[in-house]
Amino acid sequence: MNPIELEQKYVVHAYNRPPIVLVDGQGVWLEDAEGNRYLDLVAGIAVSALGYGDPEIAETICQAGKKPLHFSNLYHNEPMAQLAAKLVDLTPFADRVHFQNSGTESTEAAIKFARKFARTHFGEGKTDIVAFTGAFHGRTMGALAMTPREKYQKPYEPLMPGVRFARFNDLESARETVDDHVCAIIVEPVQGEGGIHPAGVDFLVGLRELAWKHDALLIFDEVQCGVGRTGTFWAHEQMGVLPDILCAAKPLANGLPIGAVLVTERVAEVIHPGDHGTTFAGGPFVTSVAQVVVDRISAPAFLQHVQETGAYFKSRLEGLNHPHIQEVRGKGLMLGVQLDMPAAPVVEAGYRHGLLLLNAGADVLRLVPPLIITQEEVDIAIERLEATLADVG
Ligand SMILES: Cc1ncc(COP(=O)(O)O)c(C=O)c1O
Image (cartoon, rainbow, N blue to C red; front, side):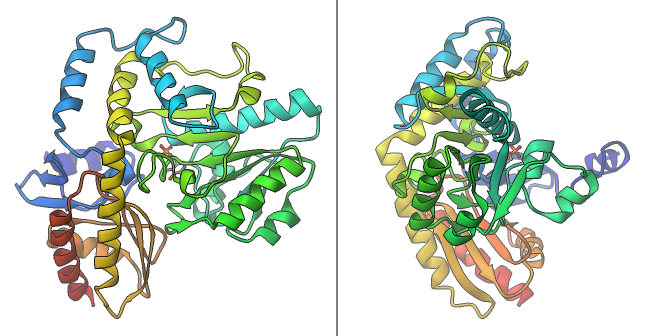
């Protein structure tokens, strides 16, 4: 049986996949089993920031792979401690880090920390969480409760109680929703799954003030928009608002599973041994690789490349002037193309034109390529996108 037949027979059908089997990749290009090459504008959903076959990542993996892959959180380990120090150095508001294995685990940890913080300082009854329309915080039960999409939530009810929703980018709605029973407000500085919607600066400033007023913690979910994606190491750096907790994951180890929650000392102080933990997180293998990613992406020249290439990509998309394109939005290399038609047929046609594309919601094309993409590769992407759109148009 070929891999697709094997999968159809043995794997739970929880994903709809196109009939291609990816086998290799180099830079921003992926190759399937039949030798077709695709320009990748997906990066494994904003994960493979340094692209494929990066020599430094490969060498780090070889070296770390010769040492124990796992020690457990029972013991100290050097690469984890070094990665934590690097992340804190890069994050003015943060004093400490707690590691996870994924984005959803990071948001779970964040809300656990917020509840513990509220219970420690304010006693019982301050357990509610405010999230926003269009948000995506993950699929585990706590994160799912904060991800207001019926299709994701309905089959798994009852959900974790205590989550309220306000309208994204609507401060009045947030004001009506937050009160003294709220322990945390969680928001993506740039919504990803919800359709690439940057939060307004006034909105985030207002949330910061609301959180202070009601003794709630402000959590930024930068799982998708963080780690260089928008042209600064964290997206919120461009918005001048600091959270109490930040969640990161996707690109942090360029494709190996990792999550991180960065917190202030005040938050860290309420977490004691045994309060939260996991078997794998912070292991020496993955944190060795993550150190390379963090060093490379935080370099000013790298971030400048993301800003410049992102601005170039955005202007080329705006120049497409296609009748089905209503708006181009986003920051850095996190771009959304609002269509007046479903995005799914465009994604599908992309395969025929050697282009990996992704939707965000029903009618937005989400472009989140490896951050190493060059202007020449953007030109190729635009050419292929034009052909793709002509195909479905
Ligand atoms: C903003 C945000 N938070 C959380 C998650 C969940 O991350 P993971 O899929 O690694 O659990 C995602 C995934 O897309 C995300 O975009």
